[in-house]
Length: 93
Image 1: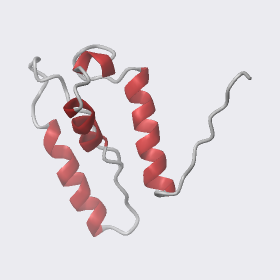
Image 2 (image 1 turned 90 degrees about the vertical axis):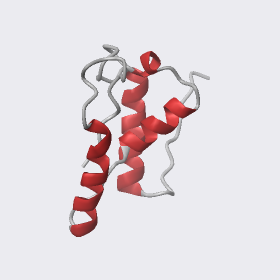
Image 3 (image 1 turned 180 degrees about the vertical axis):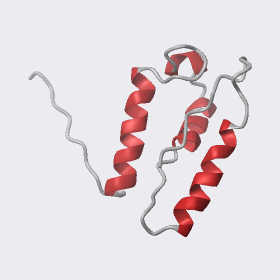
């Protein structure tokens, strides 16, 4: 399961999405066949660093742009592969 990124608090779309991760974590804890990729927590941490909401959204309301898409991918990979996963980067050199 993947918790959602936070919606923009300056819109009327900000309802109970911040609570989804806690509920999903309870489900994952009670079921051996489930895992949770905590995007909500990661998004909160990113926003705490000073990153502006609009820097991670495609519509300034609730959809990720390419930056947050990469965050989703990295969190999901870490959830599946654990702390020791390594993503090799390639250059044009």
